[in-house]
Image 1 (cartoon, rainbow, N blue to C red):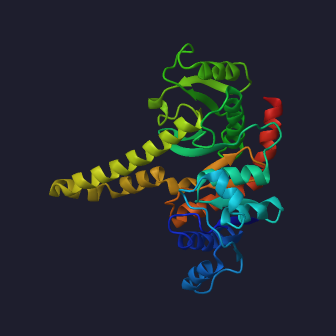
Image 2 (image 1 turned 180 degrees about the vertical axis):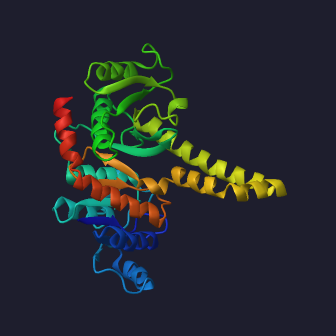
Image 3 (image 1 turned 180 degrees about the horizontal axis):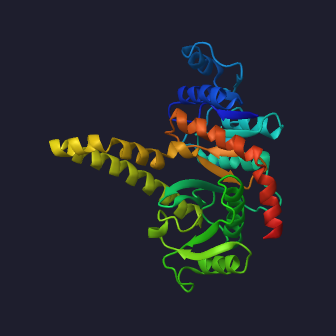
Length: 329
């Protein structure tokens, strides 16, 4: 198994990507191709001393910055780490691609280079989140901010296949994010999507509200990319805020500090469940390949797990199942 990693994508690239590649090569045994500024990458590799023979480097002199317009940058920067890395996957010289870089650029480049799966009109970004009952896959969280009902239906089918074969949920339930549970609520777009889902063979559980997201009653939650991205960013800020507030309260008194010390095992368990790094980034579903988009502030563990998820998608042949279920469902 060979996974391409955009070494220049994260806020602290290539240091984070290099460390993640070393961890992934050692733990999973995969071959890792680091793409980016070769001088910088090799300097980071040197800091770790003798590294695995499973790690190789491909020079890409350009980098697409986070603030740059996606489509324009992909066209102009043909030697960027994102474009060069995806071209390797396109040539079937690697099995997947991981990047913590400009999300729009990754979506654009992946769609243009790898193309879409048969029957898919738009790719969708799905992210696995922790809930009270395990995990839920939310799609879309940023690939398409102005979709049609058929696009959300296809997201449901793609998420169904991923949940079934990667998350091991035999008959995942699908919920449609809305302002109320009643069928009559929501925009025409939501109502039409609701009709498509209701008439399908999917395990559609109906509308769900924002307060239901982390309850975990739905294995899959559908929404457009605008709403999904807001959910993602708000969730990140809430988790960060809660952690800071808890730390402030613990420091406010001796009794709280003693109680916190006794509760360390519980805090550590909660941290693991809430840690985005455990889930391996967001999945770009619908493209004819395997692409994982990680957060710009990702740490080595997050990138390492993104590499694992890319490899699992290949092993379980998720794209084959997506095509089959699009035809069936």
